[in-house]
Length: 191
Ligand code: F6R
Ligand code: ZN
Image 1 (cartoon, protein in one colour):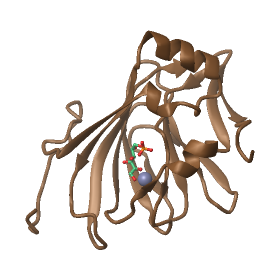
Image 2: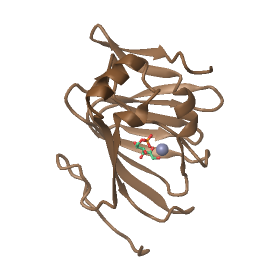
Image 3: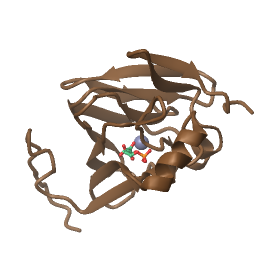
Image 4: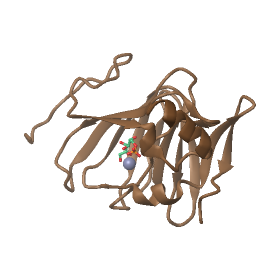
């Protein structure tokens, strides 16, 4: 990989970056145990292993000083009453932040840190979200038809710890009840 300035275009409505190194597709099966309604999850999976979200990465060496960029696309849909979402993770190097810029769609970023604090921020086009060091993060799409599309950039040596979230999820879950969005406690958290 050449150490030389580079450019790429990120244009609405095209969205897919003009330069991409890696395309990750995450399906429903990769989110087992994360949704509130496990029966709804298994029923849905029995019909199809639906694509829930996709990530387009622009690669750089995964070393200190470099930055990684990309686009995250969470598709619209629900498992039971709960909106489609990313797996969510801590960064392996906990002291690494991340910046997200929302380009399309509506949704939330659910976040929490090992100290027990949590936060939920709304995402809509034009909004920039700063995820500080030590905060795990998960994107959730609440649009009915649109994808939730965000551009992200973070230190290239951050790494990803998915295990902590796989074990207990996040404090809060985002569901729809009688046409309104609610944040409910995750019954699995802290067990
Ligand atoms: C990178 C980052 C995003 C996510 C992407 C998919 O640190 O936060 O690029 O990787 O939104 O989410 P996960 O990685 O949780 O499957
Ligand atoms: Zn991250």
